[in-house]
Image (tube, rainbow, N blue to C red; front, side, top):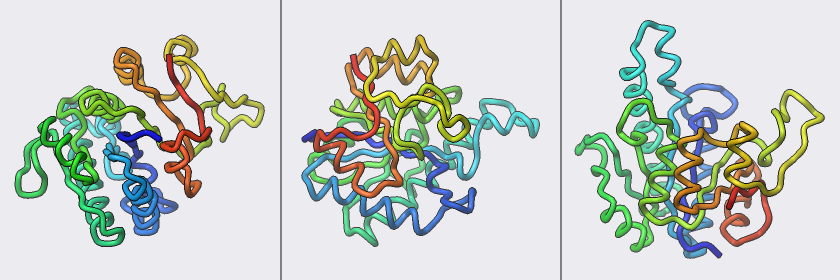
Length: 235
């Protein structure tokens, strides 16, 4: 059983079937999934993307410069973080704190590493919002960075597929499933797991990455319990 983990959720998952905004059914579902970790005694941190509201790269097509677009994307992650915090506290009765890399004291605590660890030690779920606080870095990189900072034993990349494949399983039925792979192999084969910055951070800090299907109930708990689920990236 892992005792401290970080879960990376995509903004896309928050949109549910509607494809945009925040889906109340998914919020209720993911709250219960995260609650199962806390109930099992696992210190749980979360990083959320913002793609269900705004993607920084999409802004360039509107004439918005990259840095501004990235900041807009960071603010989108704060909206998702507040929604998840509310669901965890209201529906799952789990104490939760949002720590933002961009200071906005009226809605979230500023990100301070020691404070984040203290919250985790007290059994609170910690949601890291606003990415790294810097443009040009993905929320995957933010997840890897925060996982390293809090000394997480496992980074769970929650996706809509069952793990890592040699290609896109939703487009090509002949792709092969990869149960276990090294960081270097992922980078060399250019597999779509995380961007290279995030992978390198995990590799340097020896943080294993578990890629799994978040839409299968119980997968999170299985992953932290050491059961074989999804794909594992390690040394």
